Image (cartoon, helix red, strand yellow):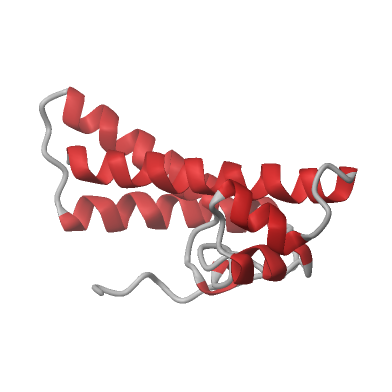
Length: 125
């Protein structure tokens, strides 16, 4: 578990360095993207793609996910509360929670007389 937190921190630090590098390039602090990448230890190809507004690997498949990032955070919050309370959540509990979050989202979109959005139930996988 500690390793996952360390990786998350490293990922966040790397992402922050990339954002700072882009801001430095845009403000004229650095002469070129290549020199900025070299000075701040950021991969030049990553920097070039971000400047061109390419999505990050994490964000590139967001539309294919069953839950929005906000719903995922809410699911993690629920799971954390269960764990703190001494209740070990099981796969079926996760699925039921995810389905409840998704259903709440659907209910916010759909109207009483018209069903605008429908999703199939979350599968076992």
